[in-house]
Image (cartoon, rainbow, N blue to C red; front, side):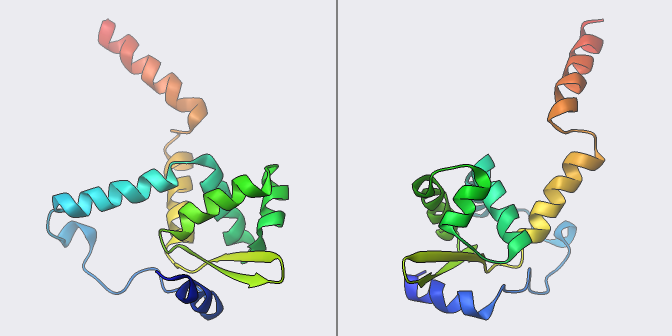
Length: 144
């Protein structure tokens, strides 16, 4: 999306999460191209800094690169690089105010996606602390 559209979408606010569509179980099998696109999206999200940036933006609504860098304990240039990757997915938009770039989430699916990820991690007991133990138990049971 051209940069001027990123700016105009920032003023409009987040788009709704999803247009009405059939339940996932009722949709046709994903095509190869669809699966690759989903994989590419998950690759962008498979970065702790980007996930933390998105979470902060969900919580605050909008933040400057400087504010985000301070919150995450990173250099502004490093934050800016990660924000660019997220902007390329059309999840974020930005606006300039003098020397400051303000970022906000424009896709309404971002917050529910993060919430579902946390739900999967917390409700299933498969967080980082328990995943290793579950794997060790499974391997131990297979050896016996």
